[in-house]
Image 1 (cartoon, rainbow, N blue to C red):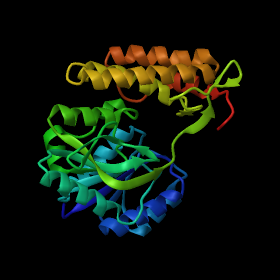
Image 2: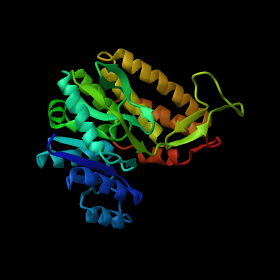
Image 3: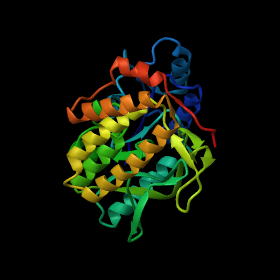
Image 4: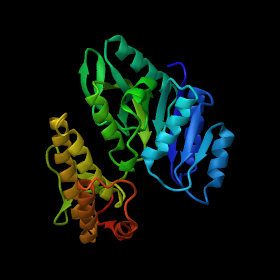
Length: 310
């Protein structure tokens, strides 16, 4: 991987993005692209700083989702001759030597005879991405695209990210597609990626904190609008991969259902979150993709999480 490019997707980013871009430039020289996913007016100062740092900024007129934004950057990198593309969200924090660690893990896995789909850090926001350890190679499951190094051969074999999913499960679908093609995701041992996750709230039942063996007493919740995409895209992904990866899909679905119930218990008004669930389920069954309907955005804006933050 002699010519690795870095691609960030960003939408109305904090100024911290500039430091992440500088860290990436230190890793791969000036081969860094930041795709503005339709942030609109008000963020020009951030984009000016990103360009001053040495990155290329590709501006979009409208918000088309993380899949479309990353694909635009990936295409740009591949057309420029990239041998691999490393993708990041705007909230990820890159440590020195990050790219070298991913590249070493790729070379080690290939040397062990593994058909590598991509390489990710062993942990993402403190959570392990390793599914099993086979002959010294860390094989992954539920890999997050932020911090994912994808060789050119994978992009050419399985294609780019699915843009119609818009945001949630974009990386899940890509990982399942790679697995269906006989390619394996691997992790770089000991490497971690810092990332800002959703807020954590106390898990309560009838006003009392729930503490049970094996069940954390906190629940990490996404922004309310994300639950439309999570339900819709889960139905889409299940339909595509239930036959080829039944155990994987069924386990993920069971965990998602538990999470959806937890979120519903904490949502106010609950009817609003239920409306997102119902529409997401219906649209997923009908194969509708893209951005959520504007009327649902207004419904999502009503929702607050009624629980103490952990």
